[in-house]
Amino acid sequence: MTDDADDRMEALLIGIDAGCLPVLEKLWDEGRLPNLERICTDGVCSPLESQMPPWTPSAWPSMYTGVNPGKHGVFGFVDYDGYDWRVVAGDDVKEHSLWTLLDHHGLSSVVVNVPVTHPPDEIDGAVIPGFIAPEDPPCHPDGVLQEVRDAIGEYRVYPAYARDDEGWSDEERMEEYETLTRMRGEAFDYLATEYEPDFGFVQFQKTDTVFHEFGGDWPKIRRVYETMDEQVGNLLEEHDPKRVFVASDHGMGEYEKEEFRVNEFLRDRGYVTATQGGKGMPSWNPIRTQLREGNDDDTWEPSLTEKVAATAASFGITTKRIGLGLNKLGLDDVARRYAPDGVVRTASTQVDFPASKAYMRARTELGIRINLEGRDPEGVVPKAEYEQVQAELIEQLQSATAPDGEPVFEEVVPREAYFSGPYAENAVDIVTVPTDFDHFLSAQLLGEKFGESTEPWNHKRDGVFAAAGEGIDASASADDAHLFDVAPTILAALGLPVSDRMDGEVLPPVSPTEEWNYPPYEAAETVTTEDAAVEDRLADLGYLD
Image (cartoon, rainbow, N blue to C red; front, side, top):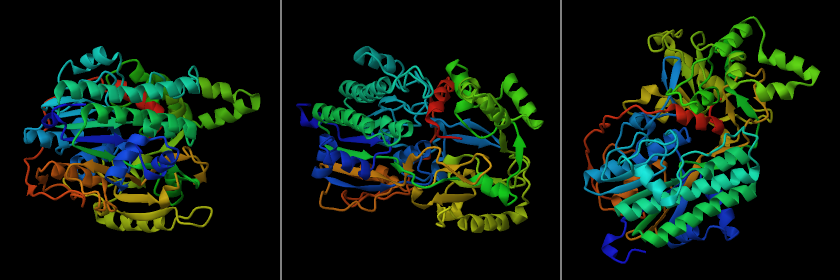
């Protein structure tokens, strides 16, 4: 613990991916998370409403900038160029982060493992990027990652195994999860000691991925969260920050109802046209082989074999038909084990994007894109008909009902309901919010509109917010906290003005400060890096169809 109180860290933000009260409270009841529980007991603690869409690559930038995706520019895992796509990076975030605003005021920061921070900002302090950065990412300052590895022994962004690697047992995978979680805390501890920052931000990602990989396996979830809490306790003891904040990008829970295949719904109503073969939906799976081979790509193009599969599919020789034949021979398991992901994709029924009027491009966007003339390369919907088509789609989606007779969506609205700013036109045209987030949305064409959920544990709307320490009024309520409120609240807690471009507000436990018109964010010139290595690891998470 620091002896000189004047040298104490002004504020520490602990990011817990998918952290939410239903999970945390269950663990508190078991006596498993004493350090997080103490923060909440000593200060304020409440649900934290996420944005739309409540997914990592868009939500974390919204948290650390305080603005909606229409202002910072990142709506999901990928950005689109016509019907093609590429994986987003930190320089796609076009608004000031907390640490660049603090740098403007002469305050230093250490930022470890925060998603969508590659390439890193050049600030007074240190930055080690997290999720969606490549393994061995460029960090700030140059050489700091090797210093961390020299100090703590090892540091990696991603697990050493692929999710479909059958050579790893569950126990070995859990040990890897615990190791990665410890790496975050130990790296931050080292850098905070070396740099003595005014502000610290450490993010724990495996608290989310343990659900994606292992569903509701409570003993496994408990192990990851306990390891995280141990690291939080170590950091609080060693650095004794004046103020501590806890925040998450979204919640996590079980999807209790059927999967809804949006593009099948749209195909049934004449909006989607199907094709056999092609590149298909954005997905980590077909590009992970390239990435593990070290190719410096941020997208995926079919190989010769995959193109042959697509050609065969155009003549009706699809993976579904092949699978039925192999099933009769008892060889379907063999086929699934050895068929390359890209071949499976290119030999499947897919959305013909240029020929379709409207479609769900990627399920994590939670919305529909209209193939608009003059905006999209081969747009088929005339501009004069845009509002009519949008209204028709909204009406039809609002009427979609599940097999139990309940509405699939609790809200279907134009994008303006959720997005505003200079990049809002890059958003989906229609936002679709599943009722209680109980329906997994799929963009795949699988023949039926409903089916067994591909991933029965996934993101929920409410995460968690907590704050304790100097200047935090523990008697005030933060019950209406929103993801956008985190950044302005931390700035105000440090006595600094908030940006007048922020969509969030200073939460009641902190005294508000004035607003400033900070200069527009300008990304520093960066060097292209091996983004391909990232997508290799992301393939295992299954976020995109």
